Image 1 (tube, rainbow, N blue to C red):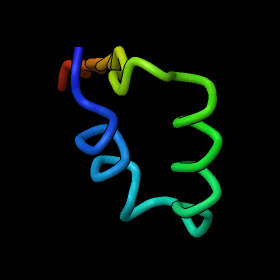
Image 2: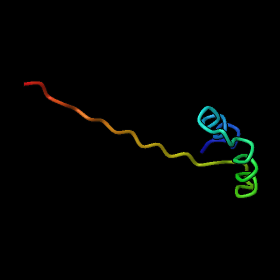
Image 3: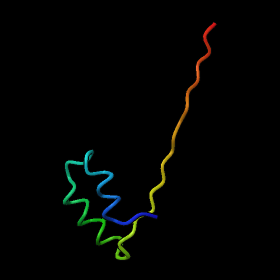
Image 4: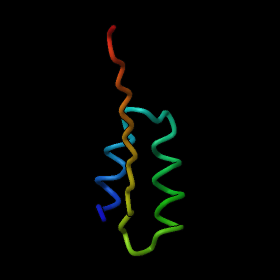
Length: 48
């Protein structure tokens, strides 16, 4: 669990709509916390 400010900082460099996103999330998440889940993938190739 991360704070709402941390979540917004994480998406800030990728979102042109940060102000709108902040407003929308503050309305949806009155507890001021966001659960972040990340998925990482790994692709491995063998050389002959």
